[in-house]
Every structure is written in structure tokens, then in C-alpha cells.
Length: 606
Ligand code: PEP
Ligand code: MG
Image (cartoon, rainbow, N blue to C red; front, side, top):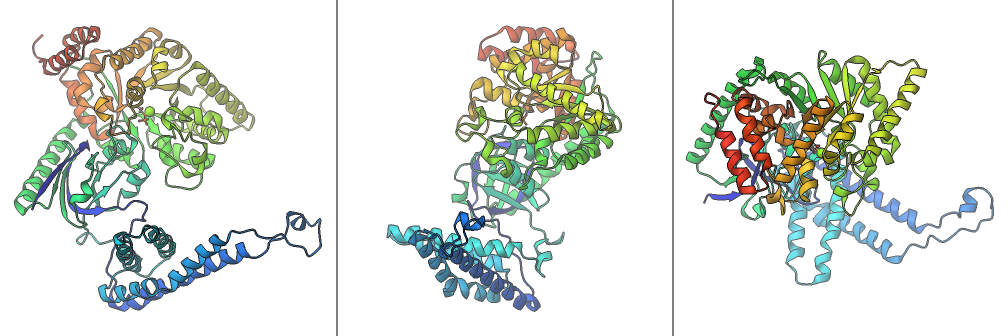
């Protein structure tokens, strides 16, 4: 029987595929068929992982139970044979012994092998099935002590699983199904980080459903930029689903259809086709300039997270990058990219731009974009208000200085601007500028080229920065309004929290007034003001922003044609007075009424 559920549509598009349920804390395990002639090799692979796991545990046991030399002995000061006791609590060794016994148990040592033979499946999949069956048994018993033992199963299974996943296998290529056999999957997860979404990219993933998450989280922004239809905040979806069941999702309205009949699938396939035709029609605007009906040219720039976005921007006829989110260079890795690695990346990007402008934002890590290498530096209690972005890099010059140097060096190869995220005070700007000046001196003394006129700007994404935009505009070369965070900090709502997402309102009078103030500050000081938050790429707000005086928009390339279309259909002389009236109103209903009027106004009639 078909079931319909709802979440929040965060990345447009229809996806049709098979449900792929991700379990919390468990590695993501693929299932594939092993041909007869490789079954013995697969079993050997499993046995070898078991053997290594056993060896590792014995090694740990030996290390903690054998007496260790004292510090003095290690330093060579004391040559007497006395050794300090290891002082390892008995329950630690018992714990390891229990795990060693589990490895010997036929449930782990033999059952998965039988499954490999019977189902002709890969070792990881056989082990996962065995783990699920064992956990199920433990969950069903009433004894609270036995219930907790299921964690031991996970420990042991994860140890073997990790070893299996690290091995090179003869059957590895089977993980990559060929075109015809490829099954499009729809990932169903509790929540996903931006790093997870990058991993799904290129993995036959048609769409994503998360039970938590919000449209302005970095995961949602990334899903949009990768054109992955995504529904978030669809709580408890996993209860209504089985792995492998057919799913249809609509990333515009948040609809999820489970187990639909063929007629419904055909209907949504036709809709997919229609959406594609619409996109193709918009793509025809590629070579057209973004000019209002009354001849004001608007600059449309791209937000870029991954190198793939550069191709997408070219396809929509966009030349400049208004926001290069460098943190994506730092995700999904244990270490921090070196100055050299960053330099090569920025140089490659700017050289591909044929003289257009590349605006590089310095590292904005923290909150929902975390990297293991600096995890301990982040504020644990309230990361959104803690050591994030410019605060984090100013505290950790090992992160900031190599990035500044890499940006400066890359600026010798094309037009680069440097942008500082999450500024709240002039002090931060002054400090960053001092570091840049210092690094310029260093490079000069080493006779390394850079652009001495490198422009420095800031993302205006806190109320503090917006309210002091007049001062910032006098010290900086450009400003860019980051509405995602500006709305979060103005309305005091965590942008990743689906519980308060309903309060995220770009039309809130406080938000509109702050945006207007920044645009005015730019006009008065004569520096360019752009907007790089998601509001800039939402064609519903294009007319309003044009009427407020915004002339530079930076967005995910996928939405650029729709914004261009809105610009082509706008007459500033009609819209501007209406927007002035809207900005005067402190009332939500009146703002919405005027906003609708602006949206519906006809550019053919004054
Ligand atoms: C913003 O806050 O609007 C912005 C562009 O930055 P990010 O979404 O990367 O925080
Ligand atoms: Mg931001």
C-alpha cells in the first residue's frame, strides 16, 4: 500500500529510487554479488580480517598487562631492573577477553562465512546481517545487563568491518555497478553533515531524506548545489520504510511517496521530464545579460563549494565567483591542507576563470561544518555563538597564515579578492589586515609574486556587522551580505534546528532593515555590495532586493537562470517606490501584502 509523508523540500527536483536506510553510528555497507569463482577468496578475506582483529586485541592486551619501564628508565637515568606496575584495572582486561571470546564464537567466526556461500554476497554484507540478527536477539531479552552487551557486539563487528573496508579486494570493482545495473538510491538518514553529502555525490544517489535538518543548513545548501533532490525534517520516516522499497520524493514541496504503483511512478517520471524541459528553456538565457527592463545591468555571480560547480557556472553563462567556500577543501580528511595544496587549488580555479573575479572566503569552520583536525578547538557548548570562522582562524594562526599566503600567491595568477566571514567588530578586520600586510612583506622579501592591490572584504552576517556597515565600508573594499547567518543571528534561531525553522523569515522587518542599511552604507562609501546568502538565489526575492538597491547577487549556479529571468522582468522605476513603502512598515501582514503586490506588478504597465 502506498504511503505519503511530508518534510521540508530543501533542494528542488523529483527523485525516484530505492530506499537506502542509513543506521546511526554504523559504517555505510554496500551489498554486492560475488561470482562463484571468487567465493573462496571472499571467505579468505573474511578469515584474514578475523585473524588481524584477533592479533590487534592480543597486542592491546599484552601492552596493558605487561609491566612498563618507568619514565626514569626510559630516559636512561635509571638502569636498575625495577619496573613500574601497569596499574590497569581488571575490568579492562576482562573487556578485551570478552571481545576475544566473541571473535572465537561461531556466531562471528562461522555464520558470516555460511552467509557468503549461501547468498554469494560480499563479506561486509554477510557480517552486517549477522550483526543485525544478534542485536535483535539482545534487544528482545528483558535482562537490562544483557541488553547492554549489544554494544560489545558492535565493538567487535566494527573492528572486523573496518579491517574489511580497508582491504583491497579482487571483487572491489563490483562495488561500482555498471550503467545498466545501477540502482538509484534515495538515502534515508537521521541527519547528514555537509561532508556526508559530498561523499554521496557520484555514488548513484538520486535523492536524500533526513529526519532532521533545515533548509539553511550547509548540508541543504550543498544538496542544492549538487542538484540532489532533498527533503529534510521528515521525522520518523524510517518507521514507514523498508530498505529497497521504491520511493518518490519531491524536493520542492517536501513530499515523500513510499511503495507507489507503476501509474504513479510514470506520472512522476513525466514530471521529471517536464522539469528538465523547463531547465533547458531557462538555460537559453545563458548568453543574455542580466538587465532590468529599464536598462540597469545587474551582476550575477556564483557561489562555489566544489570544483564541479565551475562547470555548472559556465553552463549558465556566469563568469565571476562571488563566494568560494574554502572549508570544503578541509572536509573529509584527517589533516589540514598545506599552504602549497591550497595555493594550487586557488591558482587552478582562478586560471580557469579567464580574467573574471574569484572571491575567496577564508575558512568558515565550526557549527555544522566540522573537521576532525581542529575538532578540539571548537566551542562545544554553543558553537553557533562560539569560536567559529574568523574567530577560530584568528585564534589559530596555523590555519590563517598558510591560507593568507596561499591566497596572496594565487593572486599573481588572476583577479582574486579575499573575504572575511562572520565579522562582528572592526578589530577583527584590523587584525586580518595586519596579518595580510605582514605576509605581503614576507613574500616580497622572498621575491614571490602577488597582487599588491588584492581587495579585502567581509561577509556581513551578524547584526553587529550590519549595524556598523558604514564604518566597515570605509575600511574595506567590498561587502557581501550573508543572509543565512544574518537571519539566524538576527532572529536568534539556529539555522540547523528544524524545531525553530518555521521562524526563519527573510521578510522579517528587522532582517529587511539590516539588509537595507548595508546596501545604503555601500552606496554612501562607494564600495560594491553583494549578497551571497541563499536569499540572493531565490527568485521570489529578486524584485524586492533590486528595489532595495542591490546590484550584485551571488548564488548557486543552478538557480541563476531563474533569478536572471526575474531581473529581465523587472522595471526598477515601478518596483523602487513600492519597496520604499514596504521598508517603512513594521507589520508582518502589511509587509507580506506589499511583497505580493511587488511580485505581481506588471513590468509592462507603470
Ligand atoms: C551566509 O551565511 O549567508 C553565507 C553565505 O555563508 P554560509 O552559508 O557559508 O554560512
Ligand atoms: Mg555564513
